[in-house]
Amino acid sequence: MIRSTLFNLFFYATTLIFAVIGVVFSLVPGRGLLMASLRRYTKVVRWGMRVIAGITVEVTGHEHVPAGTVIIASKHQSYGDGMVMFHQFDDLSFVTGDHLEKFWLIKVILAKMNAVVIDSCGGSDARARMAETSKVVREQGRRILIYPEGHLSQIGTHHRYRKGVFHLQEEFGCPVVPVATNLGQRWNQGDWIKHPGHAKVEFLPPIPPGLEKDAFMLQLQTVIEARSIELLDLQDPGALDPSDIGQQRENHVAKAKREAREVQEGEKEKTS
Image 1: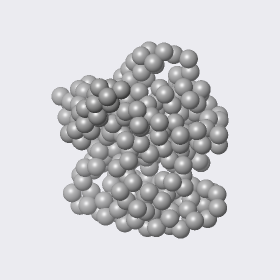
Image 2: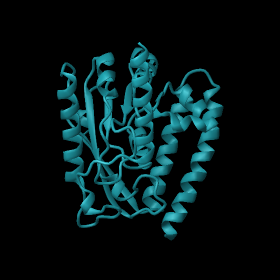
Image 3: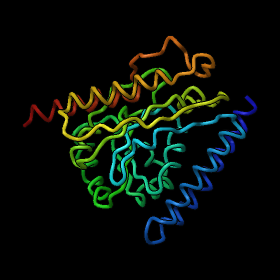
Image 4: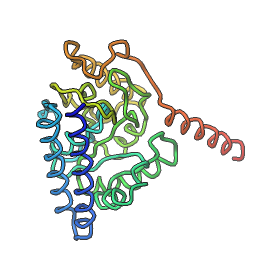
């Protein structure tokens, strides 16, 4: 509890400081200073994870990430996922839920980064917004990170995979690199309690463009979930409840948004 409290205080204070710095750098032409500060921020947070919280992270599989434009499709279990992923690349864009836009400082930074901000529960409106912003990212030749589940998943479980990653690949015409992880065992979602120990993040062989939607989605989910389960440390489970392994879940926020969207789309069909 003491280590967790110290780390959380460190994490939120560091995040606030770098958010202010990020807003200042967002006023400077170009993204260079902003992205450099973001890499420094993630490096500082990873230092805190290791030294204060006792969480070490091993990243492997970089040989599977092609040069140039590529889509990184990652398992998402922890607030720490982004810290690890952004530390791996110089100029990474990403797809994120619109919940972050309620924080003014973060909203300014996201706009400068050309982040693709969508309703994390999907739908046609989210797809249109993703297509519009991703066009800019594609023209810049950047890598883009997406979490196909749309939400943080409880360690050992998964959400229903959203098809936005398939439509993104269609637009980019580039490989999708799946990413597996067990970081949630040490830092589960946004939990206050952290669990000291070792975690792994692994880039997997890329999925080339050209597959049909259902085949692509099945392959993506299968490789990410299977490898993420293989990475689980059952000798030092941390936040993992072994009975959760392989379960599909849907949190109340995702369920409420999905049901509201389905009702709205049903009404549109009736009037069309």
